[in-house]
Length: 241
Image (cartoon, rainbow, N blue to C red; front, side, top):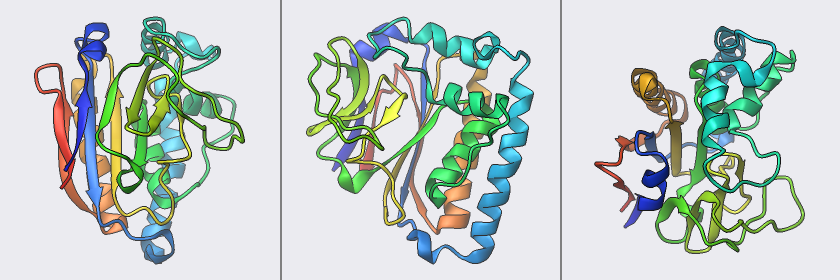
């Protein structure tokens, strides 16, 4: 059995945070996604790029409320210089007229949800994890190699990150995914995460996880093994048997 465990060190920093989780089992490989589903995923991503404009009231990325709350959040823990919330990086591309493009079906789906709701969304391959996945402050030195990089970049002391028994999975909370557990076209089991630090957006978070679950079921043939909003009062969930 594998669990997702949010640690006390996280809740001390963000007592009102809400972490939406969708656990998808039995996803189809990328080359087995039906053509009509592939077309629907592509259409959804295009439309989400357009819909993201509704969250951008200022041409200065940090002055948009959906980004400002994360800029504030990133001041509360140790980060690598220049690290930013994943949703800021997506919205910045939209702001610059450089729409987010296709990667893999599963990643395209979670990027679609991230853009539409302006919430950070990520995904990891459960079968590539070693032991439980934990979210909390680290003492540093956790093994990590970011996607697209050739060198290791261990975590910093006091950094907030997702990690398992083998090292970090995603650094600086939701900034960069690692190569080891990244979703690929062949991933069968996905741990999908949507984070919110703004209590006023609880309804948006619920709508986002519901839509994410529906999309992986409809287009990737997955079974939703679990769907939950993790809070300080309910900080642990089972993600695999």
